[in-house]
Image 1 (cartoon, one colour):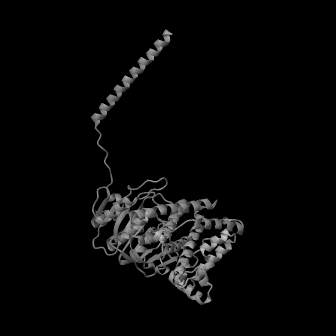
Image 2 (spheres, helix red, strand yellow):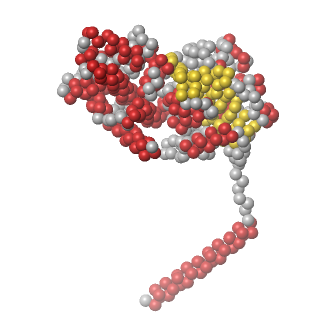
Image 3 (cartoon, helix red, strand yellow):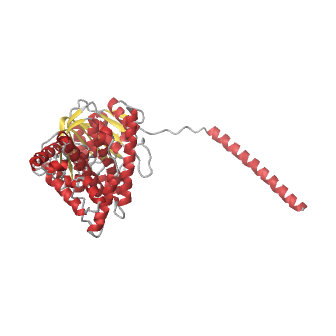
Length: 518
């Protein structure tokens, strides 16, 4: 079994290498972040195409006819299309299959118009079905008319044909785990494009190890979740990480950026999450809450740090009213926390990544922080992370864990800021770093210079300031200096210098004597 796992890991690594090579070799002068929409869109299209082809082949195996033959038979066509669309949520006509495109390219019969028709037809195939909303505008960021692909349709066709041919040469099959391998490879590319995009990447991708930590924190002691929600879902990687830990019945998310929203929907489908099992919306979470009164068993998020928002009139909003103060206009951090708590059910757990300022800033934020601890007793843990973990910012961050069913009023503080693997451009958490945090969180015991379970009275004494050094002392005392030894060392050094000077003078005198003799 271990050997099989190792073989699959090697296949995955090779697949990732091939995909990134394609992305780099074919994008030319196009920015990596821009080319992302094309290569990810085509990988996604191949996935949809192969899913339909495989499902059709299974349905028709007993009849001994091909997918194309069945589709062209008017007596079979309607039932075939309906069966596949109801089961998968979409349909790809035989003439638009990825494999057919490859054949057309090799025969010199491909044009970019064919590709545009194909993606349009996939979206159209969902109209009238439950998946219609999930597919609407899904390919809109793959602009096949963009001059960035080429100045003429012929040039654009040539470039897209090259990408399709290269992708066709890659085998996504790794035994029984084909979908996982393909979905994970897709997510790998999202992460690589995020790294290349630098500052912009924070909008849509949470580093894998941080996602793993948040997912583990909200799934401790659980094997199944009815629902998980991310109000700033980006590419959906954080939601999917929760699904890696436990069985998730339904995924929910909202995202402001349209391109990223499309990416998240693709990511869900690539990881074999059925359209009926996720609900995602595009929009500003704080201004236009798409989930109204819904509550979720787990909530996770990595919201934009210290973002601007509009607090005017927000105390009339049920999500923010009870705190009496709003988060400041230039720092929406606590507004996101309030929103998340509003959507967390009575037995739920939530974990959110935020900048350190939320721990100690005063004014309205101080009032909100105090209410959450003193009145609602929902703050369960404060975890300090290392600096330079995230794309686009080098600041250290903190993970706040909240629960609504707490009986004690303690708060566990963990200072993991000094435990990381240093990278060339970015630091990262190792599996051991993540596991130590989780073990400490579950044990809820003091660990010298690493963790402290603070009582409510301690927090109150600190005026509800949660700055981690107030609770976890990581100060390392310097070794005492032995002055007598230092004095002796200086004397020894002086003696050594005197000895060397005497030897030098002797050598110089000998040289002068030799020159005089000549």
